[in-house]
Image (cartoon, rainbow, N blue to C red):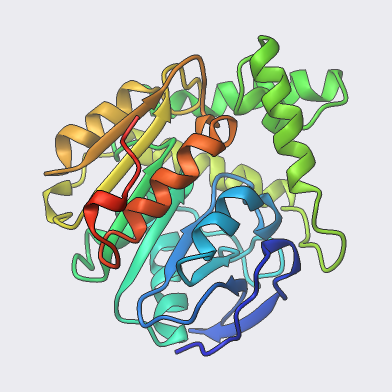
Length: 295
């Protein structure tokens, strides 16, 4: 189990490595040392440098946060697996390699799909679960993410923009402003930056998501711990209706939908979302009355 010192900022957290089941995983950690950490599960094509530092730092003020590169991504070794079930197996190896038998999870987009595939065979592993911008296995129209992604990557290329500006945000004035601010925050880390994902790895991940969307649904009733689900009201990548679908499938879950926003609603509304996520992930440590109201 990790015993790292406190790091106050994700921008300065050192990159470490751990070898488990033949894979060398790159990861970062910060926040107070705890027996149960919060492990972050990343989106399609995302590396260690794609987590919003405003959200990570807010949570790390109270919890021990661990981010990691999946196999074949960034500085982690090996090839990206062809299925999200295999990616979940890799995540399990990483978590057990660190010495943890219980974790909390913060996930976004593809990371939320991998988190679900981790919990179904290991239902006692995850204590608290945050699912943002994601949907269930077999969710309606999830396989359309391939066409949407390639179209937005093309639009970004033609305008010399970061694809996330198109994939995560609306193209109205508010969305464009939030997109630029988000991309600028991702650039705050000046040294020891991660490697960008390879094109072949990105394509493999995208195909794995399509398979996930076309496959038979998982039994999410095995998720019995507290679960927080959040999204924007108009997510083009993982349709917002799938967040409501998750809410129905996971007993006792909470659902937050932010207005006039898309896939990256948690980044557009980080000032509102971060305190909610902190309250949810620290609910075992503080009276419920201390938590901010749900929005």
